[in-house]
Picture 1 (cartoon, helix red, strand yellow):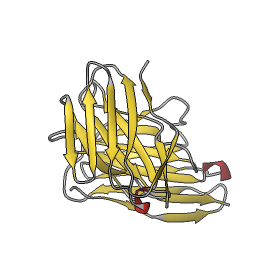
Picture 2 (picture 1 turned 30 degrees about the vertical axis):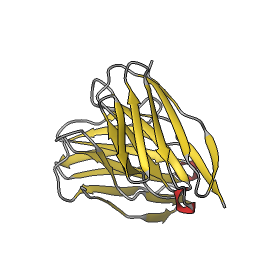
Picture 3 (picture 1 turned 45 degrees about the horizontal axis):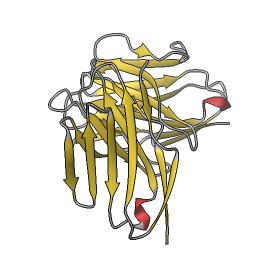
Length: 109
Length: 116
């Protein structure tokens, strides 16, 4: 079966750095997305990785290792507004998005 | 980025009535749209995949006769919750897949349904 694992909840301090991991086992791979979702709102796009390596976009970076079935989202200089759920999703061989359960990130002052 | 609208954003209805939710891709064509449901403090749950001009594909456990999906054009999909009950109260989110490029899904803002 298809499976995506990410931690349920993480806590970090304002101004610090946090890494949210995602491991996946899917039928085929056509890319991996990270989305951010604030409570009561729809998800918004953060990043997309299809090749191995690190993609940097401002305070957020995303890393992919296809051989290990592993990705992480790195958030730097954390701000209170970064408190949200972070969803990892993999595009399988049928171009369907397989969703992880999401990681709730709590930022403390 | 591409924009997806969803209407209504919030609806309160009586038990037994039907509610229609519209999802529109505003600046791109979407052969495929998706309907999700999210209960409080839970992850997104895919309900069905809506394909333009053909029948929707429902996920296991989702009643196709209760959640009617119509995808009559490349920019519009509708979800009708028939004979709604309080347990159908949830946050319903649609997304539209851009068939160009990286097949990113663009999400609508969601519809909060409350059934009394």
